[in-house]
Image (cartoon, rainbow over the protein chains, first blue to last red):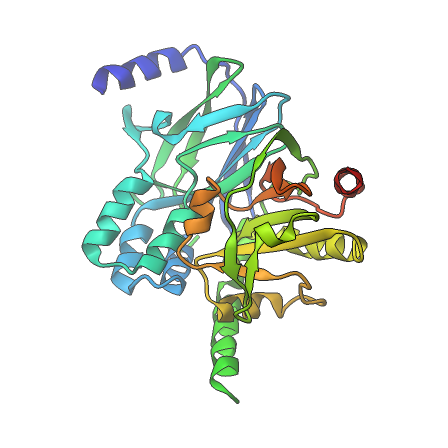
Length: 186
Length: 181
């Protein structure tokens, strides 16, 4: 696993470099980071802790369980195929790097195990599952999808997201730079 | 006020509470596109579910018609954005051998009612309840919204992942093409 991570990071150094665009929603104060490279568009938009709490409590999570999720750094993640051939992503290939330490994004399966241990109801777990960004998905040209991804980072913490996807029989890579977790009150 | 209307009121209050959340997420989304990915025809999986009023619907009973099957949920911003265009499409093809089935995942009727009551025109097509997401899994849907186009023989012939403008002229043309086959 460690070797795989180091290998990924080594080859990311040679990945095509595309600029990261940054914007802030004037109404919500929430920030977005977006990049476009080699036929893919990737965007992360902050979800505030209050938004995460409200969303999951409305789906049947207890206040304590919603708080557990909201304690993570949560982003709405959008991937769009802007090229002319199918692309396929595997979230397990993505890494976020803070203070030089690469980490994998917590999987839906990991969350599911936690929610089962906590006794979260099935209907709440179903809503949770479909609200997360898909673990694996193929996008035809024009297709796009969105979902939440979580990062074990403190409020206001900063990281680079290294994403990866397959297209035309090759593995491609890109980076969103200097992404910042939402504050408690943006 | 009966129990159902009280519950719908509560669900509407919850939707209003969440409005800033959905607005924040919708504001940043890519524009709705109008592409459909054609596929080699394959039999559609079973789709047999009840609608909001408790009436059972079976895709197999719709053979001979072109059917748009849309998987969605009220909390999914692109699903919310594309739904009015699905109603416009349905109206544009009214009287033709065309049906829309909107399959909601994991929500109850009151939550859906609270959402659709915000529309100027309520959806005229059936909204089916896949409460335990078993049908979505059988259809191998990985994310919401996902849409399939079913031909008159009951085969999946095209799909779309992500929000679409369903009444775009190219979409209507593609469906009319299937209606002629």
